[in-house]
Length: 117
Length: 116
Image (cartoon, rainbow over all chains, first blue to last red; front, side, top):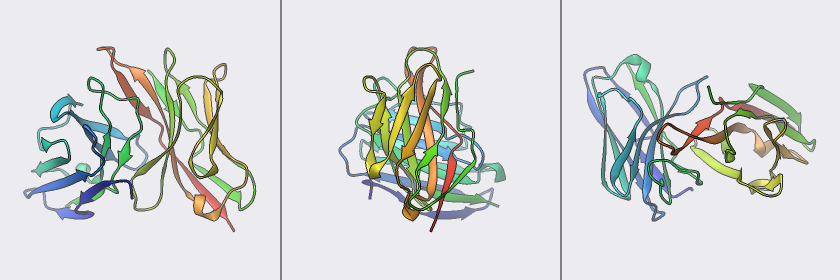
Protein backbone atom coordinates (compact mmCIF):
# COMPACT_ATOMS: atom_id res chain seq x y z
CA UNK A 1 0.00 0.00 0.00
CA UNK A 2 1.15 3.51 -0.78
CA UNK A 3 -0.34 5.20 2.30
CA UNK A 4 -2.92 7.07 0.23
CA UNK A 5 -6.49 5.80 0.46
CA UNK A 6 -9.29 6.79 -1.86
CA UNK A 7 -13.00 6.10 -1.50
CA UNK A 8 -15.16 5.02 -3.13
CA UNK A 9 -13.29 2.77 -5.57
CA UNK A 10 -16.14 2.93 -8.05
CA UNK A 11 -18.88 5.49 -8.52
CA UNK A 12 -21.76 5.66 -10.98
CA UNK A 13 -23.74 8.86 -11.02
CA UNK A 14 -26.30 10.63 -13.10
CA UNK A 15 -25.69 14.06 -14.51
CA UNK A 16 -27.89 15.71 -11.91
CA UNK A 17 -26.39 13.98 -8.87
CA UNK A 18 -24.04 15.42 -6.30
CA UNK A 19 -21.33 13.16 -4.95
CA UNK A 20 -17.93 13.49 -3.30
CA UNK A 21 -14.65 11.66 -3.66
CA UNK A 22 -12.49 11.29 -0.60
CA UNK A 23 -8.74 10.94 -0.23
CA UNK A 24 -6.74 10.41 2.93
CA UNK A 25 -2.98 10.12 3.30
CA UNK A 26 -1.13 8.68 6.28
CA UNK A 27 2.35 9.76 5.21
CA UNK A 28 2.65 13.09 6.97
CA UNK A 29 2.84 14.87 3.62
CA UNK A 30 1.93 18.49 3.13
CA UNK A 31 0.89 18.50 -0.51
CA UNK A 32 -2.08 16.76 -2.07
CA UNK A 33 -3.20 16.55 -5.68
CA UNK A 34 -6.15 15.53 -7.81
CA UNK A 35 -5.43 14.01 -11.21
CA UNK A 36 -7.76 12.82 -13.94
CA UNK A 37 -6.73 9.74 -15.92
CA UNK A 38 -8.51 9.06 -19.21
CA UNK A 39 -7.64 6.46 -21.80
CA UNK A 40 -5.23 7.64 -24.50
CA UNK A 41 -4.58 10.94 -22.74
CA UNK A 42 -1.76 12.11 -20.50
CA UNK A 43 -2.50 12.42 -16.82
CA UNK A 44 -4.25 15.72 -16.22
CA UNK A 45 -3.39 17.62 -13.08
CA UNK A 46 -6.56 19.21 -11.74
CA UNK A 47 -5.78 20.76 -8.37
CA UNK A 48 -2.85 21.15 -6.00
CA UNK A 49 -2.99 21.89 -2.30
CA UNK A 50 0.11 22.76 -0.34
CA UNK A 51 -0.19 23.13 3.43
CA UNK A 52 -4.00 23.17 2.99
CA UNK A 53 -3.90 26.09 0.58
CA UNK A 54 -4.94 25.64 -3.02
CA UNK A 55 -1.96 26.55 -5.14
CA UNK A 56 -3.13 25.35 -8.51
CA UNK A 57 -6.35 25.01 -10.47
CA UNK A 58 -5.69 23.90 -14.02
CA UNK A 59 -8.74 25.51 -15.60
CA UNK A 60 -10.97 22.83 -14.16
CA UNK A 61 -14.73 23.35 -14.72
CA UNK A 62 -16.61 24.59 -11.69
CA UNK A 63 -18.64 21.38 -11.55
CA UNK A 64 -15.54 20.00 -9.81
CA UNK A 65 -14.99 21.58 -6.42
CA UNK A 66 -12.03 20.56 -4.23
CA UNK A 67 -11.82 20.84 -0.49
CA UNK A 68 -8.82 20.34 1.76
CA UNK A 69 -9.76 20.64 5.43
CA UNK A 70 -6.31 19.56 6.62
CA UNK A 71 -3.08 18.23 5.19
CA UNK A 72 -4.25 14.64 5.48
CA UNK A 73 -7.62 14.88 3.75
CA UNK A 74 -8.72 15.96 0.32
CA UNK A 75 -12.17 15.89 -1.21
CA UNK A 76 -13.48 16.39 -4.70
CA UNK A 77 -17.12 17.46 -4.78
CA UNK A 78 -18.94 16.65 -7.98
CA UNK A 79 -22.17 18.12 -9.30
CA UNK A 80 -23.94 18.25 -12.65
CA UNK A 81 -21.19 16.28 -14.33
CA UNK A 82 -21.10 15.40 -18.00
CA UNK A 83 -20.53 11.96 -19.57
CA UNK A 84 -17.08 13.10 -20.74
CA UNK A 85 -16.11 13.47 -17.09
CA UNK A 86 -16.10 9.68 -16.79
CA UNK A 87 -12.53 8.71 -15.90
CA UNK A 88 -10.26 7.42 -13.16
CA UNK A 89 -9.68 10.14 -10.59
CA UNK A 90 -6.41 9.79 -8.76
CA UNK A 91 -5.34 11.45 -5.56
CA UNK A 92 -1.66 11.85 -4.80
CA UNK A 93 0.50 13.34 -2.09
CA UNK A 94 4.08 14.46 -1.69
CA UNK A 95 6.22 15.97 1.02
CA UNK A 96 5.39 19.42 -0.25
CA UNK A 97 4.64 21.13 -3.55
CA UNK A 98 7.31 23.83 -3.41
CA UNK A 99 5.23 26.78 -4.42
CA UNK A 100 2.55 24.90 -6.28
CA UNK A 101 4.62 22.40 -8.19
CA UNK A 102 6.78 19.48 -7.41
CA UNK A 103 9.81 17.66 -8.62
CA UNK A 104 9.39 15.13 -5.90
CA UNK A 105 8.18 11.59 -5.65
CA UNK A 106 4.39 11.36 -5.70
CA UNK A 107 2.42 8.75 -3.81
CA UNK A 108 -0.85 7.82 -5.51
CA UNK A 109 -4.04 6.26 -4.26
CA UNK A 110 -5.76 3.50 -6.22
CA UNK A 111 -8.25 5.93 -7.67
CA UNK A 112 -11.99 6.26 -8.03
CA UNK A 113 -13.38 4.96 -11.30
CA UNK A 114 -16.17 7.38 -12.11
CA UNK A 115 -18.93 6.73 -14.63
CA UNK A 116 -21.35 9.52 -15.47
CA UNK A 117 -24.54 8.37 -17.13
CA UNK B 1 5.20 22.64 -26.99
CA UNK B 2 7.03 20.78 -24.27
CA UNK B 3 6.16 17.13 -24.17
CA UNK B 4 7.07 13.61 -23.21
CA UNK B 5 6.72 10.86 -25.79
CA UNK B 6 6.43 7.14 -25.27
CA UNK B 7 6.54 5.90 -28.84
CA UNK B 8 5.24 2.41 -28.13
CA UNK B 9 1.70 1.81 -26.95
CA UNK B 10 2.55 -1.76 -26.10
CA UNK B 11 5.69 -3.79 -25.54
CA UNK B 12 5.68 -7.58 -25.46
CA UNK B 13 8.58 -9.55 -24.05
CA UNK B 14 9.15 -13.12 -22.96
CA UNK B 15 9.82 -13.85 -19.32
CA UNK B 16 13.53 -13.88 -18.60
CA UNK B 17 14.39 -11.66 -21.54
CA UNK B 18 15.62 -8.09 -21.17
CA UNK B 19 13.03 -5.36 -21.56
CA UNK B 20 13.18 -1.75 -22.67
CA UNK B 21 10.39 0.81 -22.49
CA UNK B 22 11.24 3.94 -24.42
CA UNK B 23 10.78 7.56 -23.46
CA UNK B 24 11.92 10.75 -25.15
CA UNK B 25 11.33 14.26 -23.98
CA UNK B 26 11.15 17.70 -25.45
CA UNK B 27 11.56 19.98 -22.44
CA UNK B 28 13.74 23.04 -22.15
CA UNK B 29 16.49 23.34 -19.61
CA UNK B 30 17.52 20.40 -17.48
CA UNK B 31 14.34 18.58 -16.58
CA UNK B 32 14.01 16.02 -13.85
CA UNK B 33 12.83 12.70 -15.27
CA UNK B 34 10.68 10.02 -13.71
CA UNK B 35 9.25 6.57 -14.31
CA UNK B 36 6.08 5.38 -12.67
CA UNK B 37 4.29 2.04 -12.94
CA UNK B 38 0.56 1.36 -12.70
CA UNK B 39 -0.60 -2.17 -11.97
CA UNK B 40 -4.19 -3.10 -12.85
CA UNK B 41 -6.78 -1.36 -10.67
CA UNK B 42 -4.11 0.53 -8.78
CA UNK B 43 -2.68 4.01 -8.68
CA UNK B 44 0.73 4.92 -10.01
CA UNK B 45 3.84 3.91 -8.10
CA UNK B 46 7.17 5.68 -8.31
CA UNK B 47 9.96 3.59 -9.82
CA UNK B 48 12.91 5.93 -10.20
CA UNK B 49 14.02 9.45 -11.05
CA UNK B 50 16.94 11.22 -12.64
CA UNK B 51 18.01 14.60 -11.40
CA UNK B 52 21.70 14.86 -12.06
CA UNK B 53 24.85 12.80 -11.95
CA UNK B 54 25.28 9.23 -13.17
CA UNK B 55 23.34 8.61 -16.37
CA UNK B 56 22.26 5.16 -15.20
CA UNK B 57 19.66 5.35 -12.47
CA UNK B 58 18.63 2.31 -10.46
CA UNK B 59 15.12 2.02 -9.07
CA UNK B 60 12.60 -0.32 -7.53
CA UNK B 61 11.95 -3.94 -8.52
CA UNK B 62 15.22 -4.27 -10.42
CA UNK B 63 14.43 -1.53 -12.94
CA UNK B 64 16.93 1.00 -14.17
CA UNK B 65 16.83 3.86 -16.63
CA UNK B 66 19.45 5.42 -18.81
CA UNK B 67 19.54 9.15 -19.32
CA UNK B 68 20.90 10.29 -22.67
CA UNK B 69 21.06 14.04 -23.00
CA UNK B 70 22.10 14.13 -26.65
CA UNK B 71 19.17 11.94 -27.63
CA UNK B 72 16.85 13.47 -25.02
CA UNK B 73 15.87 9.99 -23.96
CA UNK B 74 15.25 8.24 -20.67
CA UNK B 75 14.57 4.59 -21.49
CA UNK B 76 13.48 2.18 -18.79
CA UNK B 77 15.24 -1.17 -18.69
CA UNK B 78 15.35 -4.43 -16.81
CA UNK B 79 17.83 -7.25 -17.51
CA UNK B 80 15.35 -10.09 -16.95
CA UNK B 81 11.59 -9.55 -17.18
CA UNK B 82 9.08 -11.18 -14.85
CA UNK B 83 5.44 -11.91 -15.59
CA UNK B 84 4.62 -9.71 -12.59
CA UNK B 85 6.21 -6.75 -14.39
CA UNK B 86 3.20 -6.65 -16.70
CA UNK B 87 1.69 -3.22 -16.13
CA UNK B 88 1.33 0.28 -17.56
CA UNK B 89 4.50 2.38 -17.43
CA UNK B 90 4.54 6.17 -17.45
CA UNK B 91 7.44 8.48 -18.14
CA UNK B 92 7.28 12.04 -16.83
CA UNK B 93 9.43 15.16 -16.88
CA UNK B 94 9.35 18.45 -15.07
CA UNK B 95 9.28 21.73 -16.89
CA UNK B 96 9.08 25.35 -15.83
CA UNK B 97 5.83 27.21 -16.39
CA UNK B 98 5.32 30.94 -16.90
CA UNK B 99 5.58 31.51 -13.16
CA UNK B 100 8.95 29.75 -13.09
CA UNK B 101 7.49 26.86 -11.15
CA UNK B 102 8.18 23.24 -11.96
CA UNK B 103 5.38 21.23 -13.55
CA UNK B 104 5.20 17.52 -14.22
CA UNK B 105 4.30 16.54 -17.77
CA UNK B 106 3.40 12.95 -18.53
CA UNK B 107 3.71 10.56 -21.39
CA UNK B 108 0.71 8.55 -22.53
CA UNK B 109 1.96 5.35 -21.04
CA UNK B 110 3.26 2.05 -22.43
CA UNK B 111 1.57 -1.23 -21.66
CA UNK B 112 4.13 -3.93 -20.93
CA UNK B 113 3.11 -7.54 -21.32
CA UNK B 114 5.54 -10.20 -20.15
CA UNK B 115 4.66 -13.62 -21.49
CA UNK B 116 5.48 -16.80 -19.54
